[in-house]
Amino acid sequence: MRIAFWSPMHGCGVTAGALSAAVTLASSGRRLLLTQTHYCMNNFEIPLLPRGKGENMIGEKGIDSLVRDFKAGQISKNRIIDNTVAVTENLSLLPGGRNRCRELYDDKHTREIETRILSQAHDTFGNLLAELNPGYSGRTKEQIEAADILVICLRQNTRMLDELETWGVPEGKKQTLFLFGMYDKKSRYTTGYLSRRYRFLKKNKVFRLPYLSDYLDAINGCDVPSFINEGIGCSWKGREKDFFDAVKELSEAIGECL
Image 1 (cartoon, rainbow, N blue to C red):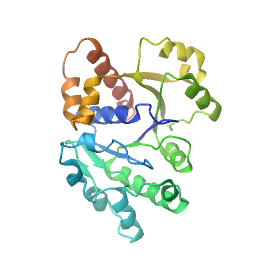
Image 2 (image 1 turned 180 degrees about the horizontal axis):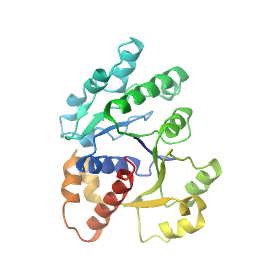
Image 3 (image 1 turned 30 degrees about the vertical axis):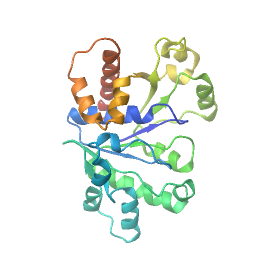
């Protein structure tokens, strides 16, 4: 199954949602490969790996290495596995490309190579969760079209929602979910209000991921796997309960399709 986390704009909590869902799904017994397709460097891989060791663990592994293998005719399932990093027993990480520029990665030839690599990575691990570059580039559209489950990450921002409605809302082949990242339940623009205002929200499942400073600290401290795994198994109150309930609800919705 191919799962894609995508947003029409930057700054919608896509990374926070993708990382928390991936760790939770893996802890429930699903084998999962996690990757990303950003044009620019982002805070995606390092929060999953031990502080101070992440860069060394990644080394030269990742999509760039597989692109070279592909061009040399050496791509294989073993090479896919060799270019991943084990995060937990069921969660592996395929680091994104480091040669990050739009001109390179939106080139049709390079895009086709990346598509082939991600397809083989999916076949190797069975489940692939990818955080996609935001926006509407041709490269991103191809990955959206390949997704069985598409999680569209949004903010409580009517300008963004108006634009999404104008451009057209993409859909996953099996399931489309909406996730409001950094959700503020005190705002008048609640998911209930927005679902009444926008038809595309009304007809699909809508989830919320509240902002939690402890989770931000876990991201900065490279402690996301242990933070999520410990939190999922604890009884919380207040903001922590809201956050972990939201993570479990989203992950269960994705897990139903796997």
